[in-house]
Length: 210
Image (cartoon, rainbow, N blue to C red; front, side, top):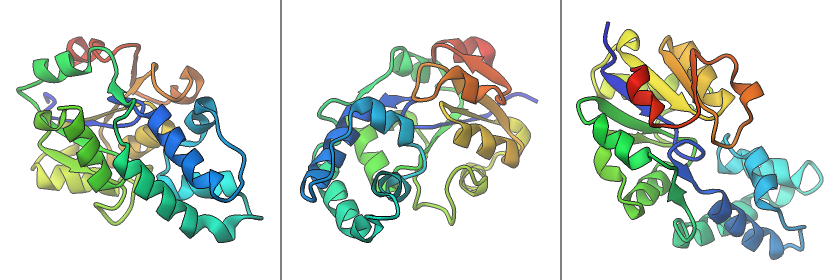
């Protein structure tokens, strides 16, 4: 059966937001005298949402600071979502070429921030739906947000495909029974993407794959 719905991860797949996330994290961490992160530090840890990201940074010893740091991070990041964030090469062209398909964003970034980032980069217009970490009752690697999107957009698993840069995207897709495509240019190295049905080095390769 032909594909009707394509789900795209956001950070590391459609958009490189690593510098803005790092800057916002460092703003919050600096208030508590916690060592700054490099962009590479952030890239290694992102993917499971804001709360888990900050928990990993703090560790058990400083976990009591979590809520205050999350609050400061969100406040700063909300004001600086797209200072440096840009879509990856061929994203816009590929989305335009896929105009005949239903398309959704499935992110572990909060829904409101995902929508705003896409809006600021003039990418929101390409999508039928945006689901964030707080949209459904669970987030990736759970298949729950995929089921939510398929229900909303009236598609079946055999008609759907997820495109992402991490094992969370692949695992969620496998659990949901949909096709999985890993992009190798994002935040995760190729070795972590081996379970995907397909791997592509550029988003422009998605059109010929479909």
